[in-house]
Amino acid sequence: MPRLFCQGAAMLAMRAAIALGVFWVVWASPARADDALCTVTGVNMVTPDQGTVSIDCSGVSEAFGRQFADILTRILKDRLDPQTVMAKLDEVERVPEEGVARTVSDDQRQLIIQSLHGKPPGMIAIIAHPVVEDSAEFAKAIATPLLQVGWQIAGQQIRRAAPQSLEPVPGLAVVVHDKAAAPQQALQLRAALNAAHLAAGLVEDPALAPDATLLWVGRRPSFASTEPSK
Image (tube, rainbow, N blue to C red; front, side):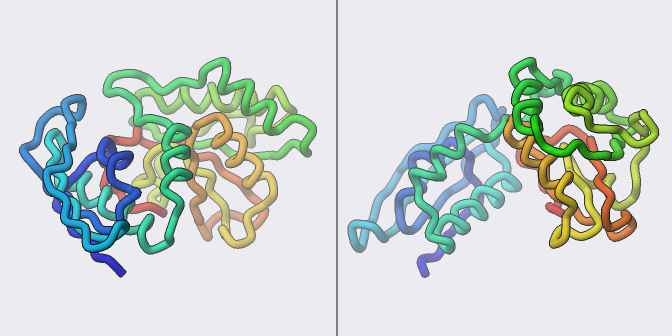
């Protein structure tokens, strides 16, 4: 298996690099994320599809470089189709701009409704992080299309709290007792959110009842976040 060496990089290098067999990504001087730039500075191919490619990047942090290395390693180890990965990149929601509140657009509301229309409505709890400025309004914006298709919100309210098990989880998360036996409503909710490009992870919390589903609206995801995934 080819090895991947990485001290830092950026997603901008992905499209130029993922089709190659081995990557050597070198971190250059830090700058603003908007100024991130990666260029290929050296190629030493042993065979047409394996070798070493040196890439110099600026405007990135070491933390992000490590995450980028993880992505490239996953592509290599799992033999993922580069063209498919590139297509999926167009579906990934961007990290919210600093100082701009998270919202649900009209198109995203319609996508949630379309995804859930005709399916049995569910009952979920919603908790929004209490110290995050946009979490409550963002949660309300997500709840609106759910209510329109007959879903119910536990207690008819969005709670403001930060459970210890969820506080470190950024962004949106669909929380269940056991991921391996997630309720159908949890899977439908997650699929609807992802269809609307509102990325939501599936998080396990044994404190929940086996048939319960909780939507967590956490801290704003940060670019190159190093928070551990749940």
